[in-house]
Image (cartoon, rainbow, N blue to C red; front, side):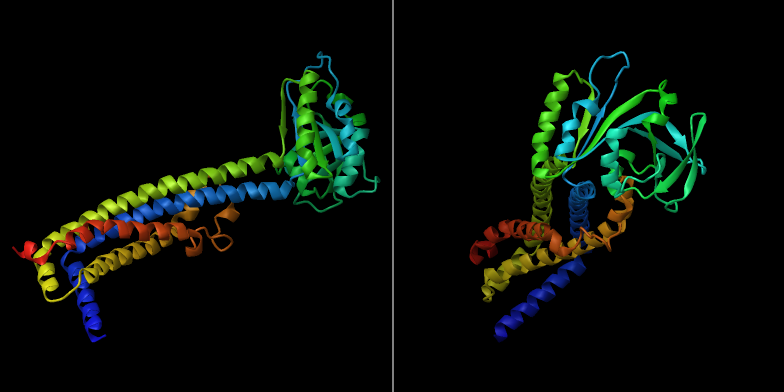
Amino acid sequence: MRSLILIFVYLSKDILKRWLETPGAVFARVLIAISLCLFFLLMQASFVLTEKAVEKKIESFGLNTMILRSTGFSKTEVRPSLDQLLSSLSEVGTYLPFSSLYVNAELSNKKRAKVIIYNDHSIPGLNSLMGWDGSQGPVFLAAYGYPEAMVERVKVWKLFFDAEVVKPPSILRFISLNDPLLFIPESMAAVFDQFSVQESILFLSDDSVDLIDIIEVTEALLKKEGFDRYELSSPIKWVGELDGIRDIRNKAQVIGGGFVGLLIVLIFGSIAVFEYRQNIFATALFKSFGLHSIHLIIRYLVEGLLLLFISFLGAVQLAQVFHGVVFRKAGFDSEFLDLAIFNPYEISGNFYLLVLLGFASLVAIIPICIALRKPVGKVLG
């Protein structure tokens, strides 16, 4: 036991002595390892935050939601309206047909609002989404930041409407993209016939499992009826996108991790071999005094692991410092920039990188292991 303690003390002093003698080599290894770890952490964080953003979109809209927009419709074109064509959807979910006017409304505070024209077929869907009993006024403004039930004077083109403010359900963000929505009944919108409109359908399926089949049937029906230009989107399609992002993240981990590991092996291994050759006679002499090769291998392994762990911790701190700047410029929402809410740099979430660093440190000392097998007599001779 005493001999092991002495060996431990000697090897610890030897590591410290080497660091003090060649601080440049130590600094180079740590700086390179920090840079590589920082690159890997930010790369992985970008994929994780993208997954979180897609998951948030899916949760906010729900998997059972579908929005259909028909673009480029000409009034001289002979084909059924979306309202007529897809009216059977009302039997399997909440069905809201509407038209978007290509003219914005202007609120009293000069803010713009999208204009939505609805008809009698839209009322059941509106009542269901808004939680109404059907007694609501014909013109209403779905907007955040206004007192509910307040009457807002709204200008559309040359006309003014008094719209009652209502709190919009989150699902309407699928239509509004966070802008206010002014709902006008079709009976009051005849004056806007000179303007183009975009036919749209908002549909919430009673069962998200059936929505995939509903989407396929809807697309087939649209093509059959001559709808060449339309846009159909649904969070259920984002599930495949989410799986794709995860697949890319896994591949990026392997490729990026291999790149990081290879560079660490080359750099740490080269420096370790250089230091070994500088002290080859001293090492051989200590071996002749009874110091086992395993002790020397452990010495190089511990040194590599220690420097890499320090580099990992340094990279984590730097990643947290640069997180807000990097991902704000990348366009992520503010909630993804707050590390108190979600921190992608926790050690538990980066275990893969730690294992990679440990494996790279082990591979880097293989040349040392081979060199230490050489008999002491040949080295000293």
